[in-house]
Amino acid sequence: MNKNRPFVVACIPAYEEEKTIARVVLQAQRYVDRVVVCDDGSGDLTAEIAERLGADVVRHERNMGYGSALRTLFEKARELNADIMVILDADGQHDPREIPKLLEPIKKVEADVVIGSRFIGKQKQQSTSAYRELGIKIITALTKRISGTNISDATSGFRAYSRRAIQLINITEQGMGATTEIIIRAMKRRLKVIEKPVIVTYKGLDSSTYNPVRLGLDIITGTVRVASVKHPFLFFKVLGIITLTLGLILGVWTMNTYAATQQLITNVALISIGSIIAGLLLTRARQQ
View (cartoon, rainbow, N blue to C red):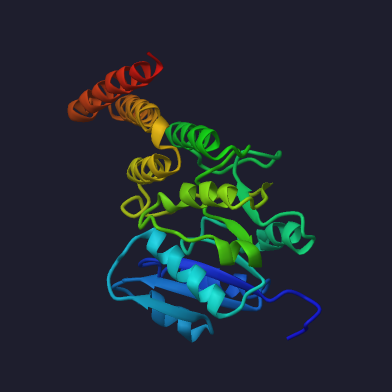
């Protein structure tokens, strides 16, 4: 290994991605020194395929969640003494050819955390639905308020981390809430967080494992937990905002579903209305 350049590790959390893991691993290997896959309790050939292609594979005995996979990958990066770690998804939504774009600011010592954002630059996103984009932007606004950083895409999983960030960031969330937890903890540790524009492709993703409503709820729940620890006196206000956000996301999703199928999902609509009312009451209660 050339001591004059950083040792770069690509880390890939994966759960039952045997159809796409080969392409992601092979493409990532072109831009990094080592590829590590965390197989999060898959029942298919994800781990075996990754190993055959030369990736290091760390296995979870059972499915523990996205945040748990990230925690394992951070630990592995520390064990490997990585200078830079880049994380990308195993399902093909992130383009490994954009890895150098995320690595460059860290190599130039301009940032500790680089987030691949879907909402900056002039590149057009592929198949980004209205309710998914609304949910992302609301969660991002909440994360910005809690963390004090100015970002456009708090839920992006395509990120790069410096050696300092790898050493200082400790993840406690087991699910998708880890995406916002990392940003909040990075800012608390005074790490420099910046964004670079990337393209994310949703076409062909399995909706059973990539349901934006379910993932949004997971992120919101995790953000509430982190916020309650970091800002205990603002907890009820944050809870009100989160509940209101949930109601709006479910409301938009219900309207989109009705427009497409002409069928109203009554129970989701009622939850949406209830969440909006509860959110408004909680927010106003903290203001009085």
